Each structure stands twice: as structure tokens, then as C-alpha cells.
Amino acid sequence: MNTDFRVASLPVASIAELDRLGDEIAELSAHLDAATAHLLDLIRDFDARGGWGNGFRSCAAWLTWRIGLDPGAARERVRVARALGTLPRLAQALARGELSYAKVRALSRVATPETEERLLGVGRAGTAEHVERIVRAWRRVDRNAEAAEAAMLHKSRALHVYQDEDGMVVVRGRLDREAGAVLIQALAAARERLYRQTRNVSAETFRPTRPWNLRPWPSSRRTRWA
Image (cartoon, rainbow, N blue to C red; front, side):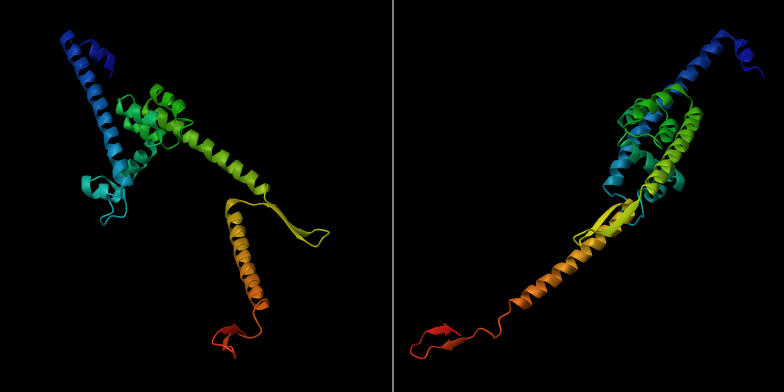
């Protein structure tokens, strides 16, 4: 059916009524988005203050029980609420009704304080479906970049241990975070063990050969160290 032809064939009064209904739908949707922004602010504060910790595993579980959200939708609300805490431009755009919740939900998956302004422009320029496609492509690029960075870091790992001409052991290396943490813990444990051994040896070295006792002085009532 040709919708444009159907609308054009309607009386002028009917077209004006449809325009009014369309404007009302758009205005009400903006109000709903603004209310959603306020709701997300409340959820973020409630979550941060542990208001759900009275028998529930998480804030999402509490939302499922209290307001009847689907568990997946509840988790998504909590995720978006947390993300908007560091994305003030997206939060303001939602509060003003400039972006729908659907767009903000998608953009918050990839947005950072550094990319927020650019992604805000994407949200204003396209439909929710268009924004979803861009976000999916953005995430693929991010994953590829992370994989390339991980591969580069993996290749740059090295650990060299050798003795120099003085007989001292020299350690040089470049490790990833996990391996580095293990090495640091091992060195700390070795240092503590060496410290205890040194302290015990020092105590044994300077221990007197016989105990110090107080003995009566033969010619007086004073005492002397024997």
C-alpha cells in the first residue's frame, strides 16, 4: 500500500490531527527518555550504596524482584547506569530527550570519556538500528586492536638471568602483569626468608656465653654484674 498516497488523500483536518498525534508521540517519548535518565541515576546510586544487599545477590536481582524486570533487562539497566556515571554527555543527552534509551544503551557498550563526544554525534545522526551496527563494528575493531596489542606484548616478553664477572647474579626481564606479579611475590618471600635467617644468625653470634646474673658483692650489700 502506498502510504504517502493514503495520507495525501485524507482531508486536511485529518492530516492535521495525525501531525498532532505524531508530535505528541515524539514529545511523550522524550519525556520517557528523560524519566529513564533519572531512573538510571537512582539505580546507580542505589547500587553503589548497596541498597540491594538485604538478601539479593546483585542490584539486577533486586530490580527483577522489585519492579518486575526480566533478568537480562535488569542487568542491562545496571550496566548502563554504571557506564553513564563516567559518560556525562551521553547522560545529559538522554536526560534532555535528545537520544533514546536504545541509542544510549548501545553507545555505552563502547564509549569512553575520550570517545564520548564522537559517539554522541553518531547517536544524533542515525537511527537506533544504525547506531547498533556502528557499535558492533566498533567492538570488532576494538577486539582486533586488543588482540594485536596482546600479541605484541607477548612477543616482547623476556627474562634473562646470568652471573657477571664478580659472581653477582643479574636479572633483567620484561614480563606481563600476571607473570610479573608471581615474580614479585616470589622475590618478596625470598627476601623475607633471607631477613629471618640473617636475624637468627646475628642473634646467635652476639649471644653471651653464659647468662648474666646478679651476685652478692662480698664486702657490701651492693650487687655487681658477674
